Amino acid sequence: MFNINGNKWRHVFAWLVAGAIILISGWVGDGLEGNTIFYSDRNEYLPVKWCVLGGLVIAWILLTMLLDWLLLYILPLRTLSQKKQAEPHRILITPISGSKKLLDTIELRLDGYWLVHKDKDAASPCEARFADGLDSLFAIYESSSHSVVPLLRSLKCHSRENTLKQVHFLASSQSKEFADGLKLALANCITNVEIHVYEHALDFEDIDNVYHALDEIINRVTKDKGVFTDKDIIVDFTGGQKPTSVALALYTLHRNIVCQYVQTGGDKEVLQYDMALRSATGHS
Image 1 (tube, rainbow, N blue to C red):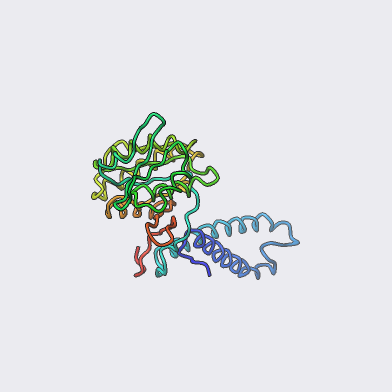
Image 2 (cartoon, rainbow, N blue to C red; image 1 turned 120 degrees about the vertical axis):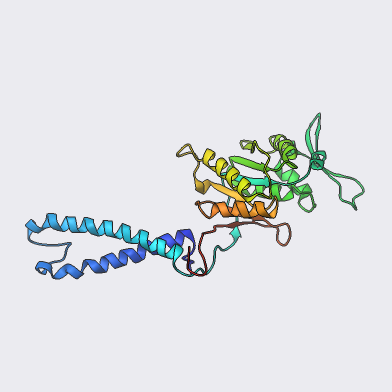
């Protein structure tokens, strides 16, 4: 069973239903001159019939748009989105949480940046060098409670087959310095990936502030036609405050952009959601 509330299947369903309606209606006028609109042995009628055929194509397109709109805004909602394992995307946008104290977990030594973490029950700190690569970091920290583990899991997911091209961090005034330090450290870890930190510190409890920051980033990324499109982007709403997650997920409702959540428990998967703006009451 396919879900017509999903963007892909909703479009397919609308095209098929509209085509069927137009095809059936095309034979309503078959009684005209006793011929079909597609064939006649009287050549003088052919120009007229080609015009009729063109009109049917236009009607098909218009009817498809109407059905697509009806499916999106009028029909009752069954499900917003079915969660699934995230697919690699070219652009990852994610909030970075944490206080300035987290800066102490990234140490710059002569041999490069190191990630340091000490659990309460551990006798000695857990350390890994960024220059050794993402797999090395993830192998050491996968089972730890370090706050960057969900980010490492996300980066590993989207770096498959060298898909990932850009990472954009959203940071609050409390996490801005940590995000800047993390950007420099990751530059030694993942190659051929641009890492950016949004220039302004955000209020993670201000939905409007986060929403417009995300809008600015996405418009900047997609302004050059043919380079990146909405389908290349995935927005992570794992980090930040609860209003941050609301703002990020809300933005994806209005664009052809998916969002993701990195599990901190359970199977610890990176889950992808393709959300759509519809109401269970049938009103938009």
